[in-house]
Image (tube, rainbow, N blue to C red; front, side, top):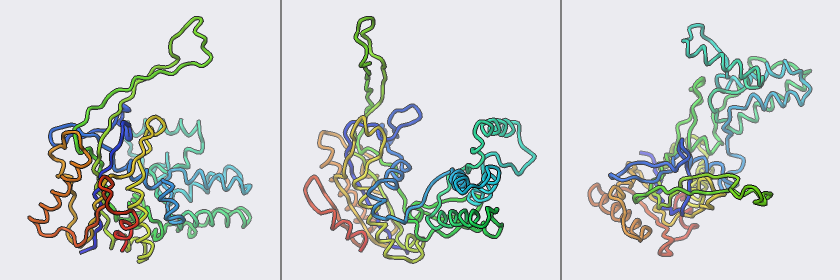
Length: 372
């Protein structure tokens, strides 16, 4: 059995709209018969992965998620005085290694809908010729792979501006130093041999109590309007917001993380510490300028062991009520942990908690615990 590190995090946010749905309102979910506020795991992971805190902690070991690799390669060829026609063709050859390019077709049996889609793509390509260099799906490219791509471009430019040779397009690597890929995984549909199974699982953050989404009616005033003809606002808008205490669950398979990183235990420990500190301190970026909704976690329960992992979200199946959400949420979480231990036996070999409300524990000790 692998060693698992589990983090149970309670974070309170003031009125905010951290993660919006397709209508621009805060995301929600029904749980325990009531509406809860929700932050998607995708939103959380992107906020953590792209934060200055995480990037500085694992500098040089972060991949790049992009569809635009071909455009970057094209621009580099152009800077090297390669003709536009060759630059486009050679960039396609290189970018195509990481996934199917937009508009590229290998079938003559399309449905009417697929044909219409291709016609639309063709019109888009006419407007922007470089759109054909984009990969259809986001590709997560490791630092080693990006370096190999750019080295190949430099080589082609320096050797009398030649095309990349077929044998030189073996650009994919096992991303053994890309911490974010090792943690969150990657899928390359056209090259499954280079897929990476995620060593870290992240839940959607969900409020521990019922919520009611309220509406913020706002106006903007034209500074040059002297109210001589019209004293009205120059803009009127409405946005949803809500406040909540969220529960987030993170599970890290440390053995798989070490394997993903090519056996580098030191880098794995650095990644675990970086992710833990980031998850505790970094907030989603949605509408931060309007709400300044930055928060540190109020409570963190960290567990380590070889037992089968389990979330403690059931602690809040019955929503927390009353006015002391912080203390009551911590109490509910602790009781659920103790009850599970009574019924199933000890669910973790070691535990450490950080309780800001009670002033117990330290960030330093928490990071030492998860990486020890």
